[in-house]
Structure formats: C-alpha cells, structure tokens
Length: 370
Image (cartoon, rainbow, N blue to C red; front, side):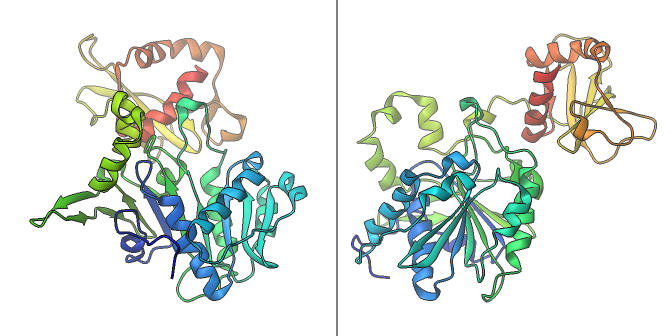
C-alpha cells in the first residue's frame, strides 16, 4: 500500500512467521526494529482498509487505556498514511476496561484490559474479528511489574471465545510483540516453549556488501516465535544517535542486542548424581521438585530444582495460596517454614541450580514467601 515515507527492508516484518501459518505468532527483539509501527500499519490498518474487520488490542491493566495511548496509535498510522486518520472513542469508557476505537464510525479496534473479569472479556467479543494483537507483552520484573494471575488461561479463553466470531479464511491469528527482558512469561510457560532452543536471527554480509537475514524461527504445533535482531545499518544509525547504548554495556545488551539480560545469571544444569527429592512445592498450578545434595560440600550446589509431571501418592506438596490447594497439598505452616530455611539460605547464596529459567522464576516467588 502507498505510504508517505517509503517502506524499507531493514525493519522487522511478519512475513517469515506468517509463512508457518500458526494461530499464535510471537516476535521478540531489541528496541528499535519497528515492531509496533509494522504491526499497526502493515498488519492491522492496511488489512482493515481492505475488509473493515476490527481487531482486538489487548493490554493488561485498565489504567493503560488512555488518550495518550490511542493518540500514539493514530500518530503511527498517520506517519505512513497519505490520507490523515482521526481515531474516534469515548473517554468515559476507559474506566470500564473495554473501549471501541472507530474510524468514520466503523470499529477499527476494540481495546480490552485483561485484568477485567473473564465474563466481561467473553461478552466483549467482536463480530467478524480480523485478528488479535498485544504489544510489549514481556514485562521487566526489575521494574516491579507483574503478570496477571491466571493470565495464560485468560488469553486462551479470550481466543476461544473470539474464534467463534472469525469469518475469514483459515484461522484467527494472535500477534505478540515484546522486548526480551526475560524469556520467562506466561505464554512461553503455557505453550511449553523450550527457551533453551530459542535462537536469535542473524544477518550475513554478502560479497556485494549487502546483508541477508538468516531466520531462526522456533515452531510449535500452534505457534511460531522469532527472536529478531537489528539490521547492521539500523544498529549503526542508532549508535550514532543514542549515548546510552555507547556507555551502558548492560543496557546495550538488552536494548541493542536483544539479550534477555535478566536471565543470564541463572544457574542452569541437569539433575546431578547423588541428589534426592527432598520436598515439592505447588506454585501457580505446577509442581516443582526440590532435590537435595546427599553430600555436604560447600563447593557444590546444595539443591537442584525442576518441574515434576506427577507427585507420588505418598508425598504432599507445599503451597502458599488457599486457591492452590488440591488433594495432597498442604498450606505451609510456620514450623515448616523453619525446616525450609536451609533451602532459602542456599537460594540466597546462589547454591541452587535449575533445570530451566522458568523453574527459577517460579521459585523466586516461593523464596519471597519463605
């Protein structure tokens, strides 16, 4: 479609992921490759102009819905559109967590806050929906941000409800964009993504000085995930204009290289020999086994942690929330907390290793409650 500014080939594109034709499509990358602009212009607005099928736009909290957010979407579209666009909405609906945004009286997007009740989310389904989009999906735990309770289940239920209203060819598709502060998030856990197998794309310089993008897309039964990187020319342009990239190595790793910096100091391992299952936690519906070293050796990890598919009938699991309690789980008591002090102390001293990063983040919540 014709644009004011010519589109180039050094910013992100959904084309490679779309080639796998999956219902769930996730693109993680450093800052700056144009994830948000590309999605709003090429994926949502350009298709809306063809068929006028509205999209659902997901946010977590009601307070995220604001005039500034909608104005930002309008500005993105008008950056590219030869014909100026004016988005219409009712400010009074912001507090409800469901807002229809229109163009010339036709619904363009329906903004939905996932924090509202599941019943209201289901009732807010869109007739003849075009697709579902969520931006900035991965949060930064260091900024005290949190995922919603039961978030993955809510997203599944929303998709199942909205899919019934889809009248296009093929399947209803969801698109998620994110900066990889961490590879731990409810979608990856819920989908069963083996984050150790995720690989970044890479650009290969050709003999003529141009660059070819080598895609590394992780594909599951219902989803495709791409870990994008910056085009070398775009990276050069950014480095010349942003001093933070030049003088802050950790920020450079996250924002320019797309490295999941919050995960890099987690001690990963396989279950060592001479470790036995000491106790089990039930956290957010998952069982986590804590294996203890049979030998006291300060030069080795004292504990190893991994998810368990099942728990022996003779073993009880500790939990921290009444809502987690099922058969053979017990709400942890003060006395039992004392028994677990050795594990807490080992966690604090980094004498614990983990099967994968998801286990670590689940147990980080346990550590805070011990």
